[in-house]
Image (tube, rainbow, N blue to C red):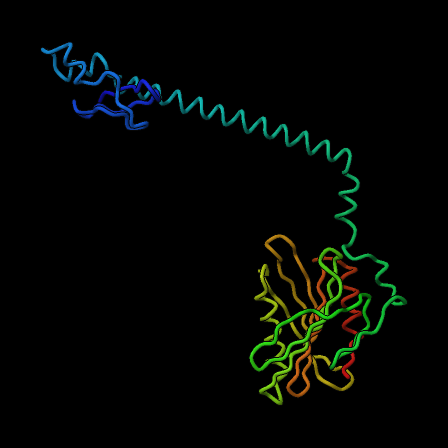
Length: 268
């Protein structure tokens, strides 16, 4: 097999027959194809054209091997330069901001001062009242068919702590089961946008003689942030209430606050 080098893109196309006229790579016409050569060599053959103009397969393979080696060497050099630049950048940032970065990751996401219950306040919902370090404000939620919704929320992911209370009134039911209501609340949380690897355990608790279910679990938010949550679910007739506290995973301060908030819950 012989190959014809293109005068425009410098790539090689296989000379499969005497009718090869255009480059396989750039589609431009070869400046000196077999028909042009034949005019100057009327008594010669295509085989003679191949030997005179074409590149033998062995030489073509050597050219391609050299090109691949040069490309590999270039990629290695690029990777090495990139690694050096990143290393220098990280070293520079570490020298200037290293202590601050280490401190940021070692400190709990929730300020320890938030554990001081002297600054806590009482929040009263229709069914449940709690003691909370955060002010809870109404959240805009849309009613669903046969369901009237009301929600209150305090804090944000930026503060490391979110406390939320959701109340659902089932208009078509005068009574709903506690276990079914708790599973529904957990399913709703697991289906929220950005939530994955959702897992939890639950146990029954008694709040002033009334049954409720306490859930504790974790999930990954937006494939990057580990989150822990505590959820308290209670029902009264056709109404369900859920108290939800979320904080960064492995945050001891967040865990203690969640426990205190859950322990302060009282059914009206």
